[in-house]
Length: 170
Image 1 (cartoon, helix red, strand yellow):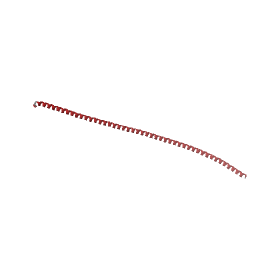
Image 2 (cartoon, rainbow, N blue to C red):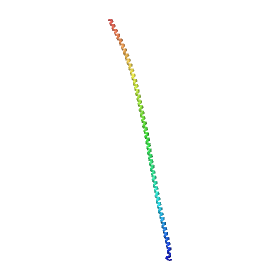
Image 3 (cartoon, one colour):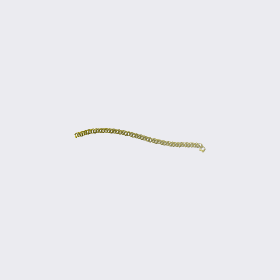
Image 4 (cartoon, rainbow, N blue to C red):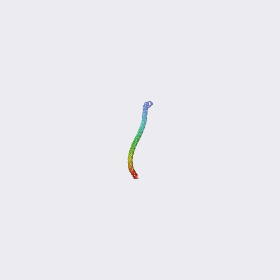
């Protein structure tokens, strides 16, 4: 066969080969694109997973920080309440102690006033007894003095009488 005869076949074959090559190239490109898109998709998916992991880690960390802060606030609140309770009990004790001191002072004043009153009564009684004893003593002395004066008067009269009698006899 001649070259000319084969030429249309050659052209057809060449075109088919070109077409096949194009198709293969297209397929390869598509497969390459597919591979590239698959790789890009896988990369995007990995990046998305990493981002999600980071978000989850960040969220977990934020939750942990929030829990720690909450516990801290609760502990501070508990400590504040306990401090208030201690101060309240201390104030109650101080008030009770103060009222006891006031009560003891009042009782002491009453005891002293009663003791003073008893001492005044005793002093009054002693004064009255002393006055009574003095009065009795004075009355007794006056009585003795009167008795002595009476005795002395009688003696004087006796002496006068005796002296007058002696004068009469002489």
